[in-house]
Image (cartoon, rainbow over all chains, first blue to last red; front, side, top):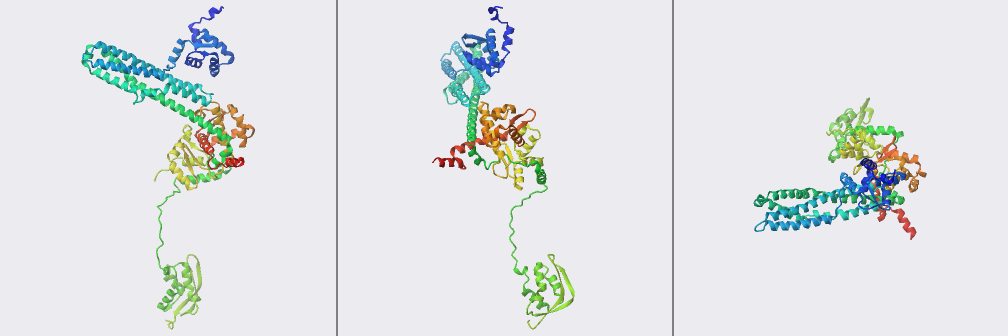
Amino acid sequence: MGSREMAITTFQGFLSTAGLHHGLLVDLCAEQGVITRAQLLAYMERHLIAPAEKDRLIERYCRTAILYAEADCEYTVNPIVASLVNFYERRGKLTHADFLRDQIYEIGALTDLLQQQLFAEEPVVAQVADTVDKLYLAVRDVRESGYQHYQACMRAFGDMKRNDAGRQIDARIESLRTVHRRYIEPLRELIDPQSEPVHKMALLRRRMADLAADRRLLGESVELDMRRRRLNIDIQYIDYTLIHHFETLIDTSRSLLNSLLEEKSIKEALARCLGNLGSVWPRLQAETIVAPGLMSSQAADLEKVGLFFNDVAHRKFVPRPRPLAIHLPKEEPADRLLLMEETLLARMAKERHVAGWPGFVAREFGDYPPGERLKAMVLPLVMTDPPFAVRMGDCPFAIDLNEFEVEMEDFDVTWESIHG
Amino acid sequence: MVDAPQDTQKIIQVLLRGYQFSDSDLYKAVYDRWYAILDRHFDWFRDHLALSGFTLSREKQVIFLEKENKTLSQEERQAVVALFLLADLWLEKGKSYGDLFQLSVPWAELDWFRDGYGKEYLDQVGIEGGNDGALEQLFRRLANKGFLEYDDDARTLTLRRPAERLIDMARRLHQQINTGEPDDTVAGAQEQGDA
């Protein structure tokens, strides 16, 4: 088979080649301009193509006209393939934001012209219609390239996320910053309410409203009315969709950059900490990193603790905190707590004769603490030089004073009036 | 009277085991309910646990019992080094930080983690010579505490939110080390030595 025949491929052959390494092809089509052989091999590496396969695949791409060999070791992607792939991959075309801005200035100039024509003493329908048509083309340009730009930028972000694996974080930050500076940051001017392009678009909307109100002019030409409507649709698209897309781009770019910077900072922090473990430990002293928990040998304890918590949790033990209240001790005279000797003597003097003194104390002074009562019961027996006479009885006396029991011989007390 | 939240006994037992609940539990059967209960009734749990001397803490989406003994255990040092190192090398390979908490990493692929300069750091916390067994045990224990998912069959690990809390501590530590804030006894001693 001759080499000439090999250069021609069937559509079937083209399709099967194109379907071989879909991801690789998508990446190649994203490249604008010349692709060097080294770049080509790097892409293949990334898409896990075996080294032995690489040359054969390049040859096959060339044969099926997917790649054009431009010079030694330099290739371009067939533009038809690239635009097809990019269309299906929803990959837009990057536009310099300056281009969009210039278009909007152009729109501004046309708007001024429209104004003059609309408010001329004798408006000429044909002139107005021509200007509206020019405006339509300029606005359409902004709409289309703006949308393409949006898609291309979003795609570029996606590619960065997909293909940047393995690249150093600093390089990734650098490339994102470049994209941001070139393609994203200039968009800010197009959406900033204070900026001139935004004023120009507002002016255009006002003139369009003037035109819409001009029944006489529109009545003269059906064509003008149609063009006006067509233009309005694009203006609305820019106002509602494209501006929103641009805002999305700015936000996305900013948050991507932030997350990369975050990554950079955590990477630095980790490296620093690992290199200074000695300084890390004292600073973690008060932190709970991993709590020890209870081991299987302590299972019994765990169960007990668990049961306790079960009780707490299911409100068997319910802590019912009351509001804090301080009960001041009641002020009571000391003779309510202590049985004074005088009190007892006064009582004896009053009674003159008490048969069964211990029983009498138990009955009459029952409110006093047990210790006081006991002292009172035995007072007549221990008092030196008493003003009364004690006569021991024959029967025993016993009483339970709660804190202790008392057993003794009963006795009577008789007051001796000499002292009284 | 307010009804007691459901499953409280189980939740408290799990907390006592040293398990750290987090929003990663939302993807785990049973634990998803427990985390939701704990999250909703956090104050209730904190107050009740406080009655028996336990401190329940919450840092963002991580809820855990503070350890009683405030000294750094060897296991904690190992956890710090292993997770810091894992994250460091992961980023070193140009992978994204977010993916570290999303992807399942096959254990066998972690040789980059066990070899090289990682060995040196692991040595410092008693996991010597890239002792695979000890390291795997550590990861299993950390899995029990809620730090990561360890799939025994596939031998893969996936980091969870409590691991993120730990790794994020590096930022604060980094700042403190750089500004030479308190506790920097080591640097202080070195400076004195130099002078």
